[in-house]
Length: 454
View 1 (tube, rainbow, N blue to C red):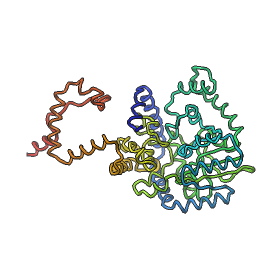
View 2 (tube, rainbow, N blue to C red):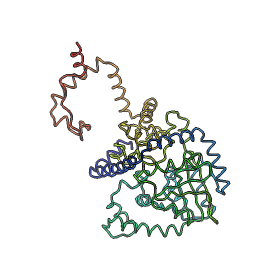
View 3 (cartoon, helix red, strand yellow):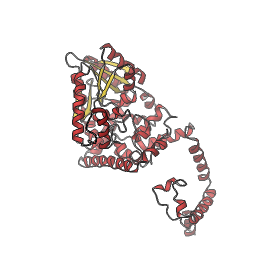
View 4 (cartoon, rainbow, N blue to C red):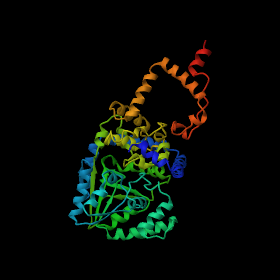
């Protein structure tokens, strides 16, 4: 299903669409209030962008440095070329310990690799311990947002889900009571876990350590109690030095949720006594993206979700309409790199307004990259036939000023004669479903300009 088709299904529920839009805009406003209080905000963005630019330009060097220092700390480091290798490495570690019960904190990389269904196929129970992730795990659907995975659900929806899976009273929708139920449910999972899996927000080449940022403390509970900790990390997460970390932690939470900082910013350097610590470094298309000069900047992304919170298309169409692990504007850049044909509609899911680039904490030129993907998709003939023929027809008209002017005169006359009920019929003119067509002018700007300049 293409993005327009999936978005049409989401927008059919007008009340939910409006609520989703307003909820995300509320987060965007919180972000703005935090940034206005920080005079050095733009300097931090520039520093973060330059640090990432440098790290990506010497990615091989810093990854090897990180590996050396991590191994010196007693950490076992694994390399995975793609999602399949990543999943097999994780499975092998689990099987070596004859583990059956896994707790996992939020990790977009493991979502990208479809780790949960892979492990479940091998008879291993995986419990997502982030509250939002646990909710959508019950409903067997992917996250709709990278920071707020269940943002598309209302508290009444969560009440119904918990009633079905956790036995809460029917009709219960009080957030505090629902959260307490989830807390008690997950405590038992933490205590019984054989292995804990986490993501990685930042990895520091200088120390061989890494940082996990959460607001619920679930990552800390999982990796502290379990005898084995597996951290899964995309290779773009490495930064050169510990002194650089503060730049990103000041940007991340403010951009993501409008907080001063995440509630828990946990540093890991070595396993505790009696525990094993593994790190899996994953490529899965990242070096391909690195080799694309027009798109390499997308690897600077720190997964804050700010571009989603501000994007008018994402807010109105929902994250599931993107059919990709990372939805929204940044996902529309990353997805064609993985499968151009499947995700060819996503770079067009944008107004190119530039708001995504304006709020990006590492200054990724998101809207420019979306425009460039459109050019490549057109050149590859990967657009739907209707769009491709329509664009060719429009290009032929725009390339011929006389034809354009003549058609403009015809359109103005036809619009003036068309009854309002017909011109605003949603089936005949979908553009006018939520818009009022302006009254057609009596003459074009071209005609007016030619007359006034004589």
